[in-house]
Image: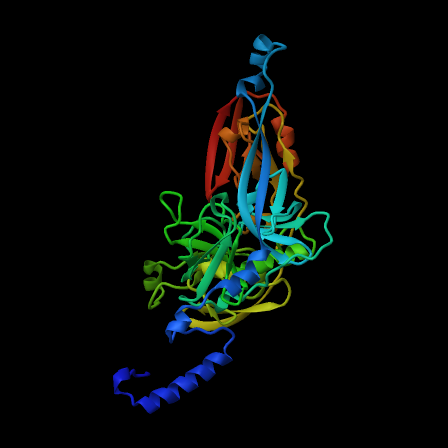
Length: 473
């Protein structure tokens, strides 16, 4: 154990020697971490960092057309007796949203938040020099709340930022947040890394955020969180606030997760390619830790396995506790999900596990989840399923929807606003049987939904629980 002596007991000459040694060691690191040592250093400015980073941070304007109509007009009885030539038709309204983005490729690739452009019919990007360009959506990833855009029809090279290694961040590091809060124009705020690996934010599937006290407000979503070298350490995405403004608790998606999404977009994919473990995990509670002899609750516990998955082929078993991934400690299941999701497809990873009190190391292949033809359809016939979009389940889709690894059948992937189906179903519902017919493929549901019947007996699985309902119609 290293002991610490009071500084007042050290001789001035010793202090000088230590200062020289410390300066040498600090200079050898990639990024200095030290407190100011003089009044002049306190007066130093962030201007050089801002001048490097700000030109690559853009405003993102998204517009979507929303069609609304009175549900009575969908009822055949109402239309028959009250349908008149002057009856109002669907009402179209345009909704607009504003956010920020970061140019991460001189060719015009821009990363922003998924929630900024979700459902948009039109997207525009405004540069720091006030020029505006149309943009197309290259990739959307709701699971990470990230999206990648491409500036249209322009061959010029744009200012772009590089990614830092977000795993190298430490609490207390200085950072700048750049974006367009409240549409007032590009704004820079400063702060520090307040915490790392925040897992209880609840806004994406990958609960692993950088927390900062740099002021982040509405409109900052999708903007850059940069370090003192002007590199992107995170994409600002959320704040904790009771009144809508900054209270010094902001959250950013780590750059290492953003890098994976951008890599998929650069490869021409419209979906993010991530490794698939093929196992369901849960965190370790204090009770579980005590029952398996742990000193403290940590790690990710395997509770379910998919046959012939990478986990199964690696020899993992139900009840194994994952404690490290490629040398990085795993605090809980959220930490594992994030760490594993930032690995690139191909190659292997080494998991350190505990099984029956013994430490073991296994090697897991980094493979994408198998995909099957989805045969997506929207049910249009008059039935409880009207307006429901369904798909055939595959391991990849089950992973994307956070369903049981071995789930099979037909799953709800979307429900139209104002539709009949919206009353009864939600995204992620797995349809097991309808009127005692097992749902194996979407065509099974399409055929049954066209039948005229007064009673619908439906069995679904929602949130891991099986439910039976009877609907008349």
